[in-house]
Length: 110
Length: 113
Image 1 (cartoon, each protein chain N blue to C red):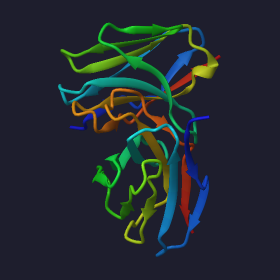
Image 2: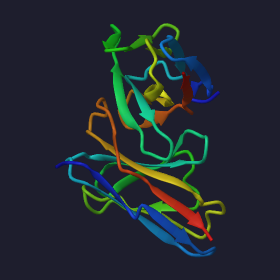
Image 3: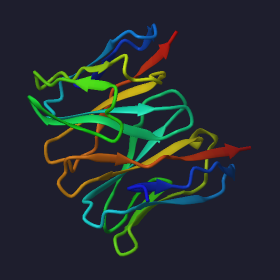
């Protein structure tokens, strides 16, 4: 089993719709979690951190479920510009290793 | 402006040749990482370093080597032993505790010709 797993997609989303996807992790002692966005042929950029209490940034909501060992990202009112690959990142308990999921591709269509 | 810089942006290598990819950061981060990304794939960890003069192998270290002589610099050498080096290489850094986000360079696209 991979340390961090994501559904590769693509998720084909009508403009204005809501899309949600998860990222599962295998190490229950993992301490920090993030969502990154990556556009084609570019470096990943931080989208948001994921806190135990959940957090929201505009149309984006991230949640952490430690009991089931997954994090989620929800995008409301999808825009064409939201089309990208979304990568989850898990930091080990020792804080010494960043592990990426394989990414979930989202395609927002008119 | 603080940031992390990779160079060159594009690199072409002949088969059997070693090449070194540069990664420099002025964010005062102790931890630095090298990842490889193949088309349509996620990021795979090659090497990482938590402190100067120390580094650890990641998941796909074979055919690569690194050094960490300075806090600011973490060069990656792709050796001739790496049989399929064509890929997008990304360098990242973060703070010592590891609980903050990682910052990425713009990447180096390596092609074997």
